[in-house]
Image (cartoon, rainbow, N blue to C red; front, side):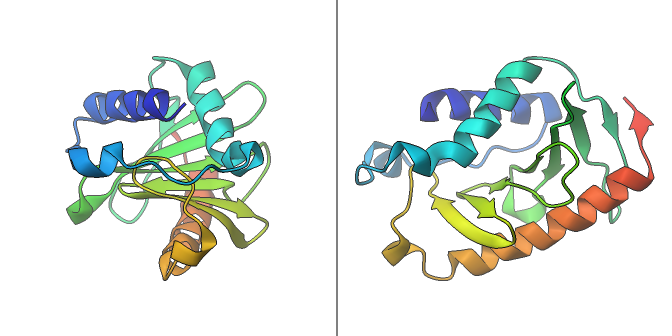
Amino acid sequence: MTQTRLIRLAAMVAVLGLPVAVVPAAAATQRAPAAAGNDYRWIDRADALWEAIGDAPPDFTFSFQGLEPWAWQTADGHVIVVEDAGAQGGIRSYYFAPGAVTPFLTVEPGASFGFTGIKVAMVYGPDGGVLPKAKWGKRPARGLSLFARAKLIKRAMDRQRYGV
């Protein structure tokens, strides 16, 4: 699952022509403690969306804070929005359920955040593995910052869309 996700994200970076966030080889070989299957539900859902989208180009773009994020919308209403991560390098992506104004998952180079309602419910490390809560540290604050950005992005997307 993690390797497939990394391959898809690398493909998206290539499509977008953005720099790739590289994970050091040593970090990639470290294994996280065994996690419950349910811990991966957010990231598995996002993987399923990319599987459904395949190599399709974005459905539309829109303006947001001087940028033009790309968006895909599935037939059932799920939305994925991808934007340049700026100085951090790589891309950020936001995943929305049909009709939702808040994301169920946000991803940026080095971390992913799963949400239940408005709370960070899961944090994934750079390799896509579950981070134990004891190691979350200040990461939930970053997750909530991305959650707030995702809400603003979704609002901008709902106001204006341009075909790609």
